[in-house]
Each structure stands twice: as C-alpha cells, then as structure tokens.
Length: 189
Ligand SMILES: [Zn+2]
Image (cartoon, rainbow, N blue to C red):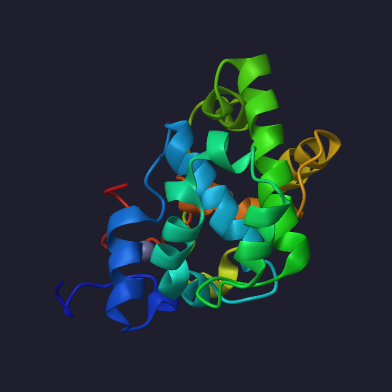
C-alpha cells in the first residue's frame, strides 16, 4: 500500500481499513454469497463503527459458518445461544436473531428473483450510480434509492435494514460509487 495515494479520508491509516477501502469498498458485487456476507456484517454494524465490525469479520466468519445463509437459516436455539456467548462477535440478541431470520428472507428473495443480486441491482437498473463528491462530508447517509430498498426489504421481513444501513450496503457492494473524485479508486471500481 502506498501512502502517497490520495484516498477517501474515512479509512484513515489503519491498514485493515485502508486495505478494505482499496480492495473491496465500492467494487460491484454480484454474487449472492458475498452480498449476504456484507448484509450480515452491516446489520450487525447498526449503531457501531464499521472498523469495529471489520476487526471482528473473521470471528463472524468462523461463528456464522463462513456466512453460509443456507446453514444460518436453519440455526436452532442451541446454536443461537452459542452465538450469544461468543465474545468474538457482537452479542446483541436482536441482531443475532435477525441474522437467522434475514437468512430466511434472503432465500425467499432468491426464489422470487432468481438471485438476491438480481433483486438488489434492479433498484439501480443494474448499473452502478457514479457520484462525483469532492469531500466525504458531501456524501449522504441515505438516498431515495436506499429509502426505497430499505422499505422493500422491511416489507419482506428483513430486520436492521434502515435506510442508513442499506446505503452503506449499496456503497460497499458498488451499487453506488461514493469514492471522492480525487481518490485513486474513484476511476478504478
Ligand atoms: Zn476512496
């Protein structure tokens, strides 16, 4: 990683955060397995900082069967109790229960649309929205699209999918390019 490169200021200098910014953030994701991984991590983020979640990502991966939504949808009370005892993840009861119910909802969407990716990308006509913000301060926390996607996800039974969480998901999975214009990744993602 080069320190001379201009990048979005939010990632600071923490190598974990910088790598996430440089490699993953804003790159269009079309495979359901990765989309579910982001969705699960983002629902756990609600109210916390993203770096907190990133630092625990591998703990989440180990605790949640490598983000295998088919397995997660079948978690029983014993497994849920185990997760609630796991100090490596975020032990929020509602979030843990929601991870299981969201996995079920996720599979319902797959059934209806062929894939979660088809469903989600339909909200932006399958084309990433390329913004051109000059500073991070200009980047909104929600948009009309995230409002609509959030509302639809809630209607489908998803939990912890407020518009802010959904917009973070859209940014992370490249539905929207919110790298600032001077960031070296702006024209790369
Ligand atoms: Zn950037």
